[in-house]
Each structure stands twice: as C-alpha cells, then as structure tokens.
Length: 457
Image 1 (cartoon, rainbow, N blue to C red):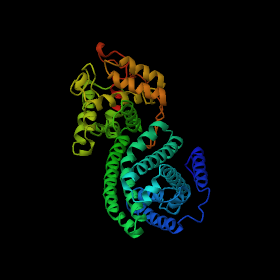
Image 2 (cartoon, one colour):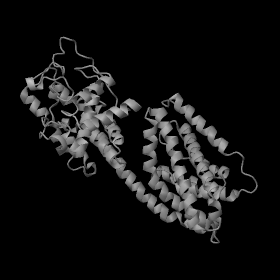
Image 3 (spheres, one colour):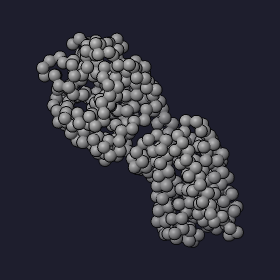
Image 4 (cartoon, rainbow, N blue to C red):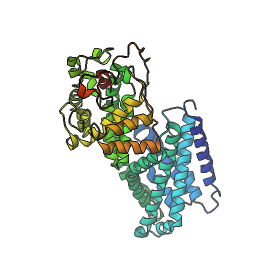
C-alpha cells in the first residue's frame, strides 16, 4: 500500500464494508444461484480480457444482473471478476478490493432502484416499453454511484475538488453506460424469455464488437497522451526552471473552462492547450532560456518567436484542434500590444485568452530563479488589476471564482526541481525592475517586462 495516502486506504475500507453490508440479508433459497454463478463467471472472464487487451469494464453483464436479480444477489456478480482482475500498478490487493467494493455498491444501488420501479416484473413479462424507464433510472443511478465513488477517491488521493471530479466522471461515462444499459436490458429480457440464457448471451457478441471499437479509440487516445507527454518532457528538460509549469497551466485552463460551462470536449482541448502552450521553447536556444542576465533586444525578439515555433511544431497533430490557436496567441493582449501579431479583444481566440490567464497565474504563484512565489490571493488581485488591458476580464473572473471556491491544489506528475533563488546582488532582472521603455514600466505578470520571465512562462 506504499504510495497510497492513509485517508484513501480508509476510504477503500469503508467502501468494502459498505459492499459487505449490501449482501445482507444474504440471498436465500429463492435465489437462482445458477444464474448468479453464470453471470459471475462470464463477468470474470470478460474482466480478464478487458483489463489485459481492451479498456475498462464490460458493464452489460453487471447491469443484466441488476435487472435480473435481487440487490444482494446482484452485488455478488462483480466480486469474482474484480478480485481476480488484472492489475498493472501496485498495490494490487488494495486496487482489487476497491474495484470489487465499487462495483458491488453500484450494482446494488442500480438493482434497488430497478426493483423499486417495477423493472423486474417488466423484464419477466418481456414488456420492453415499460421496462425502459426503470432500466434507464437504474443506469443513471449506476453511473452516479461509480462517479461519486471515483470522485471521492480522487479527492482523497490527489486532492482534486469533489464536485468537479464527480461531475466530469459522470458526464464522460453516461453515454457509454447508456449503451451498455440497453445491452444489459436486452440480455435480461431474452434471459427471461422462452429462448433462455443461450439466446440472451448472443446479445453480447455485437456488444463485444462495439467494445473492441471503443478499445481502439482508447488506444488512440493513449497515443495522443503519450505524444503530449513526450513534448512536455522535452520542454521540461530544456528549461528546468519551469518544470511542472505546463501541467499546472493545463489544470488551471480546465478550471476556467468548467467555470465558464464549456462542454467536456472543449475542456479537454483547453488542457492540451495549457500543457503545450510553451512547446515552442524547443526552438529557442537553450542559452537564452538559461541566461542569468537581462536579454538584449535581439535576444528578446528570438524568444518572442516561441509561440510561432510551437504552432509549427504542432501543425501535424490534428487532434489538437483549437489548442493550436492558443499555442500561437497566448501572449496576445486584450489592448493589442501583445505578440506575435498584436491581436486585440475578440480577435484573440477564446482558448488563447483562457491559457493567458492560467499561464500568468501559475507564473506568479510559482517560485522561479528570478522571483519568489506570490500568495494566491495576491496573484488573483494582480490578475484583476490587469483585466481589460492584458487579460480577458471574463476569464479572470472565472478563475477567481473557482480558486476562491475550490482552492488551488495543482497535481503535477512531473518531478519538480526548485533551483535556489539568486542572491540580492544577482537579482537585477526581476519583473519589477527590468524595464525596457516607459511604456513597459508596469510590474504586472502580463507585461513580461523581464525577458527571462516571459521566456520561462
């Protein structure tokens, strides 16, 4: 259990206890044990294939159990498969117990709702139109239970906001589970029909095909993540002063997008944009990124090319979509004095306006070689002061609201290294002091009046 916080281990123990209570009262003599055993065995076999070859869990069998069996019996169906499922990361026993408890609780809740709404009678009578409403309610409860349990684990283990975690998990899993729910309902109806379980199991064949298609999508998505991770690691290696910065900007961009009510697809795009916003630094000479003194005007012009470099580097990555516009324009200013093209106001793409705020916020709240981290409240006040001139006030307001409500607890997977601050004698190029012209003599995160500060953000 090493590496798992104590509170998360306690959460798993509570979930396991709750799953055991779901088995009470123990299924009696009227329980079709052969059906429980057959569904459990099929689910266990499916889990082995799913975890090793595809992705996720084959939920139709669990939902079929919820539609066919009483709640305590239905809660037994996932236990065998979850307890012996393939686990890639340690601690294996803890993860298996968590999977078993989570699945048992969700199936039990779905079965309770389905039975309370008269769903089992409709299934037994093959009354498909009447069976749809109870089955739909059961699927919603099943999805909500999984999202709530997973969201609680994320909140305890990784410090993510519970409400946002649950909402995102619920919305992402609702559509796939709705399809699985229909397959589970068809399986249950055929199971109780004169054709029997053999005909019911034939429903799983087309479901298996669709599952394989989804697995290919999952693999493609994993390849996308690997591509992004490789680019970010290359940037972190080249500019060690800002290690972890890209991931934090991605998280802050997602927080802004959710607060603005964007759909999950755009929020995911904002995450890509935030993570890759500085990928163009791969085209900037390392000596400039690590230079200890102020930059010359020529060196500054080279560094200000990094958004265009980033746009070119990501040109062939089609899945990024709008994220490429944020990479290109995240240093534009609302008043038109930014770069590379001097766009103003609504001319700046919305993703770029989001990333600009997230970028500046993390730059101010992170310790760099040339400045100490500012308190979150101070950083937010600075953003509000610059709203309308440098930043889009709508994005600043959204970030302020979500941070004040949920706090700022970034989760960074990259190993962060914090170089020591220079001595006062060496700190001649802080953002407040490195003023090039009277027009730039403003100590704001937006100005990037310190050339190295701008490069490293």
